[in-house]
Image (tube, rainbow, N blue to C red; front, side, top):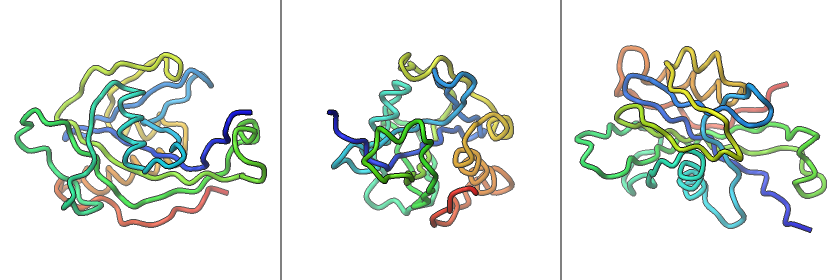
Length: 185
């Protein structure tokens, strides 16, 4: 039998300075729109998983945050000197129940997943290369439309955090405070 999945994942919200957000439409169920997501492999860090999932799901290359980067602080990409953009850690995590139809993939008794939120700012919208086993389409859209379109409550909360932290008056303000968001009841 195959190894059980690790009940831990990443959610990477990809956006531009104009707050255009990248959403992907899953193969199944139809109409399920999301940011970049994926399960951590056993022994893998959340940063390594986020870099891998970005490449696998979109073809986009990004790198780990710089060692001196302050968690939760957006870093403007500045001159866009050709270096890949760096992920932004938030230390925000969400807990949510694993749907009954997916629990067979996890060890017996595992009923919840822990999801780590990261952000990735790109200088502008880009074409992405989808993994056609996972997604059937993608769209860049404004943050308000993205909030309405995403399916999961954790994705919606992440987009709302983005809008609240840099989308209003001061785009250089800090990303949301860290913490664990309890699962929705």
